[in-house]
Length: 162
Image (tube, rainbow, N blue to C red; front, top):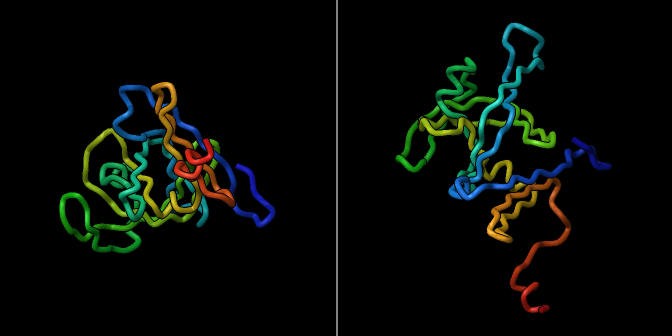
């Protein structure tokens, strides 16, 4: 991970998705969890898979991951999910994306689903950078960068210049 002049994290990731994977954007991340009983800032990193979800207001951790990692509840909150409204635990973790893009002290809600991923990357993280999903030559590619660029990608404007 690099830092810009203001000390903010910078970096980029690109994920190439196969035909089988084109249903969802899922890739490996590391979750930094508190190492209770050691120094306050000590973290243990656990590898897991994460889903990119632009419909999720906040990032989340599965109940399975929270139990296995012995996460401690920070607080509880009401969330509105695809299966209705519920009160869920909130945990504080670090999320390390590929290429070293680190988000520290992220408040993540717990979700109950038992799928192929244990982390949801929500808009609380995605809005801090730029992302694109392209489908050139029948290959789906997701890319994300932080910090965001100074200009926008505008396909309408690009098309009008042709």
